[in-house]
Length: 125
Image (cartoon, rainbow, N blue to C red; front, side, top):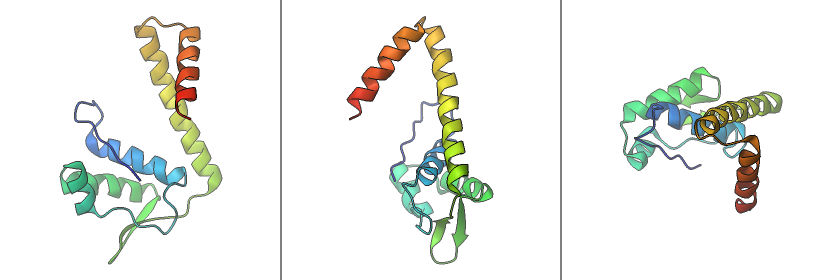
């Protein structure tokens, strides 16, 4: 699991961490029973406060995606596939809404966006 944060983003760092870890869990990249990186380790890797990582992990625990186990740290819980799929699709819908707003500000047409998406999709392979 790779987490990248941006200090220039308007999204708080703990939200960036939470969102990326959530996506990794829901997509199956991080399996049920697997321990997340320790609070200290992730904080050191990202060069952020342990409090920031703790807040992200605690929010994920409140969502029922992870739990804190003594001696193991935060461990990923089993997520029903239908719920995971719905959550991931909701994230895609959110990104599409953001894209629509950005495209309108940039005065890009739907055709322009389709071409850019096709190009991005091809380059991802």
